[in-house]
Image 1 (cartoon, rainbow, N blue to C red):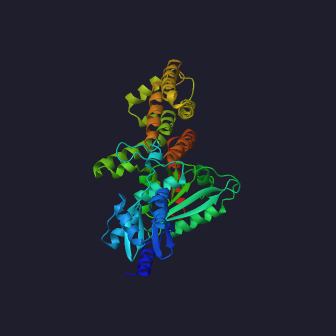
Image 2 (image 1 turned 30 degrees about the horizontal axis):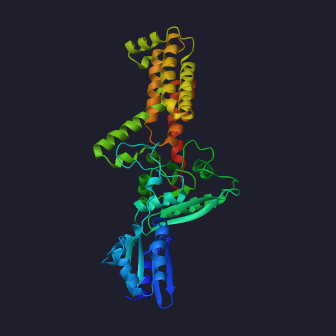
Image 3 (image 1 turned 30 degrees about the vertical axis):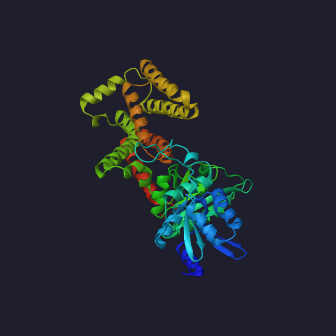
Length: 428
């Protein structure tokens, strides 16, 4: 193939990405073409071992001999391999109607964080970094498709913060992409510095109780969703990415589900959904049954619960509200305290509070068990945004059970399901 045909072929292969860089090296009677994907390669190394020597050497023959002697030189036998190697961080050099490959990949793995929010036992422990170029390098290193497209933009009228929209041009949900782009263009805030801020501004409903985007720190979750046709939003200076559109079930899925067998994954999902219903319904059930319908329990259990509440001067509603309020305070304290003392302080605080409250007859022993079960159940929800929503909605369920008993709790559950059905995430 001629030089023009080679250039046309490689441009055709990478027509769906905007990050393929082409440079022409021309000096007197020498001419060469360079092709590479900029976020994947070491630019300094490119300058030192290719561009500078090319202009220093007198002939192309000497330069080709020099290239073949380099440890980064790779032999390629087919055009299909050439395409794969470019996506892996190689530089393609066309000289004298032949192509040469050099491995100049730049890995940013040593500049990334360890996963601290979405932790897993199995699989990668790699998280995103605070630098947007590093994050794009990580994503491209894991998603080797020429259809991966990166759009850059700025947000915030004062600080002009850099942002990237990433998607697979062939697989992306085009309707969702259009809606996301329109939403981003409508954001007119003066200063935006974080993905959480941006998420709040582009949510379909400002007063929505449920999140409509997933915020993640895991590159493997990003790659998995890119392959599913979703859109990724990165903001410079933030180690989290936004994923849209999303479904309710996405919030209950951990990346570890992909690493286990079907039966183990099914069991873990069952635990999560059980925990979801326990954290939502258990406090309301306690109020509804103890205050309105004690006959629901067997006689022995009803008497046990009634006995544990002897001496408690409050109604079940005040008792539940009191304990849940202090549980939320402990959770907030564990986040705000320095890591070196947060675990100890909250554990000791919880133990002392639980013991003191029961001994002072401000709450029953059963109530301490219920609050502990609710706290544990909340922690099994993999995505924090959904866990926060459940913690707020739980108080609505408690209020419904206080006013109307078990009937109110049932109505609140139906209302929540109807509300979930009515909202959408960028058209989905």
